[in-house]
Length: 318
Image 1 (cartoon, rainbow, N blue to C red):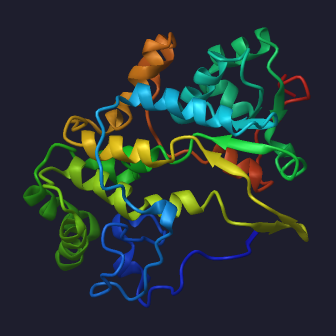
Image 2: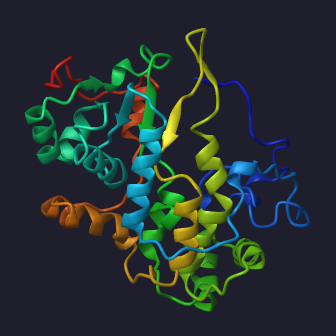
């Protein structure tokens, strides 16, 4: 798969130095897009990716319902939800199912989706929801509008494997030492942490605060644009039509307004508001057992390298 256009003007001269938290992606300081003193490349911040200036009193649940209404107003009858079985896409799916009579949609899935959330899969079959195997992603890409659970991670915190070694409630001062040990370089660790702290207008006191700010400020645009870049596959041009459910100004305002309330002492709880909402909507067993981890199940399928079991036209495992 080849990306047709890049959202960034220049690549870093020393990528490792600027690969904060080891995600291997370009970062963009949405809070201070004109500050290039510490960065070897120029930020390009899209207007629809700028950080909102206002906060909100709306709850996460309220904003999810507002978002559903926004999708309705788009007047599309060809929505296809990319469902991995993970927490983000499953919450979107549950919200759609709650409004199945008034919202036309299909579900794209793979065997991992079924294995992760078998109760939901059985419900989809019972409700006669149209199911599409992930291997058909490119075949119908120019005919449908894909809906994803994307943009949820930057609202709370990205997850990296090394984070399991760090207690999210340690102080920033303690994290300097821990992160220096992880990177095997105290100067590089200090540089990374200071870049994050210097960019934030809010008081960050704990590692979970820092992880949130990294995701929300520096990683948001990369996640958002990743769903809106045109690409080419097998000599055919595709116009991405992926709508990240958890994007938009209201969700960002919620994230800014609640970062202190969302402080945690276990990294498995970074998606606590999502899991709580799933529990309230009736998926109690799933909400109790599901943990947030990095998942690339559907992305693998979209790249045509998926090695798991496919599903047939009726959504049954082959």
